Amino acid sequence: MASSVRKKMMNFGAKKIPGCSSIEVNGLISEFIVDDSEHPETTVIYAVLNGLSRIMEMEEMGGCICISSRMVDRNA
Image (cartoon, rainbow, N blue to C red; front, side, top):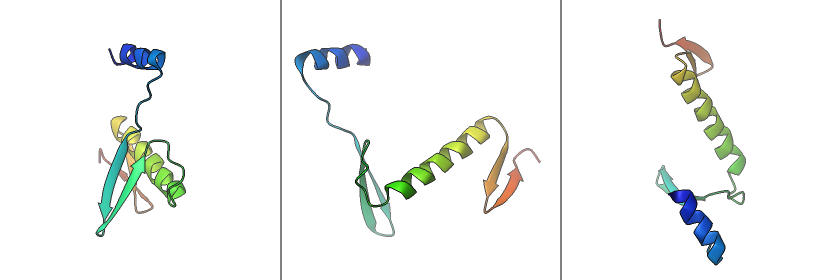
Protein backbone atom coordinates (compact mmCIF):
# COMPACT_ATOMS: atom_id res chain seq x y z
CA MET A 1 0.00 0.00 0.00
CA ALA A 2 2.68 2.53 1.00
CA SER A 3 4.74 1.76 -2.11
CA SER A 4 1.79 2.45 -4.40
CA VAL A 5 1.18 5.79 -2.67
CA ARG A 6 4.86 6.70 -3.13
CA LYS A 7 4.68 5.81 -6.84
CA LYS A 8 1.58 8.00 -7.27
CA MET A 9 3.32 10.85 -5.46
CA MET A 10 6.35 10.53 -7.76
CA ASN A 11 4.09 10.52 -10.83
CA PHE A 12 2.50 13.79 -9.68
CA GLY A 13 5.85 15.32 -8.77
CA ALA A 14 4.97 15.46 -5.07
CA LYS A 15 7.73 15.06 -2.52
CA LYS A 16 7.51 13.76 1.02
CA ILE A 17 8.71 16.08 3.77
CA PRO A 18 11.62 14.39 5.59
CA GLY A 19 10.90 12.94 9.02
CA CYS A 20 12.22 14.64 12.13
CA SER A 21 13.03 13.33 15.59
CA SER A 22 13.86 15.19 18.79
CA ILE A 23 15.71 14.18 21.93
CA GLU A 24 16.25 16.04 25.20
CA VAL A 25 19.49 15.46 27.10
CA ASN A 26 20.37 17.52 30.17
CA GLY A 27 17.72 20.12 29.29
CA LEU A 28 19.04 20.60 25.73
CA ILE A 29 16.72 19.60 22.88
CA SER A 30 18.31 18.42 19.63
CA GLU A 31 16.42 17.76 16.40
CA PHE A 32 17.45 15.29 13.75
CA ILE A 33 16.18 15.21 10.17
CA VAL A 34 16.40 12.11 8.00
CA ASP A 35 19.73 11.97 6.11
CA ASP A 36 20.88 15.22 7.75
CA SER A 37 24.67 15.39 7.64
CA GLU A 38 24.77 19.06 8.75
CA HIS A 39 24.28 18.37 12.47
CA PRO A 40 27.50 19.25 14.33
CA GLU A 41 27.55 15.86 16.11
CA THR A 42 26.70 13.69 13.07
CA THR A 43 29.79 11.49 13.42
CA VAL A 44 29.17 10.81 17.11
CA ILE A 45 25.43 10.24 16.58
CA TYR A 46 26.00 7.64 13.87
CA ALA A 47 28.73 5.93 15.91
CA VAL A 48 26.35 5.58 18.87
CA LEU A 49 23.49 4.38 16.66
CA ASN A 50 25.73 1.79 15.00
CA GLY A 51 26.86 0.58 18.42
CA LEU A 52 23.26 0.28 19.62
CA SER A 53 22.34 -1.64 16.46
CA ARG A 54 25.16 -4.11 17.11
CA ILE A 55 24.04 -4.58 20.71
CA MET A 56 20.45 -5.25 19.61
CA GLU A 57 21.64 -7.76 16.99
CA MET A 58 23.72 -9.56 19.63
CA GLU A 59 20.75 -9.65 21.99
CA GLU A 60 18.53 -11.13 19.27
CA MET A 61 21.10 -13.87 18.70
CA GLY A 62 21.32 -14.56 22.45
CA GLY A 63 24.98 -13.58 22.57
CA CYS A 64 27.09 -11.44 24.84
CA ILE A 65 26.67 -7.74 25.47
CA CYS A 66 29.65 -5.43 25.93
CA ILE A 67 29.12 -3.14 28.93
CA SER A 68 31.82 -0.72 30.09
CA SER A 69 34.56 -2.47 28.11
CA ARG A 70 33.79 -5.91 29.55
CA MET A 71 31.80 -8.75 28.11
CA VAL A 72 28.73 -9.96 29.98
CA ASP A 73 27.18 -13.31 29.10
CA ARG A 74 23.39 -12.99 29.23
CA ASN A 75 22.97 -16.74 29.58
CA ALA A 76 25.24 -17.15 32.62
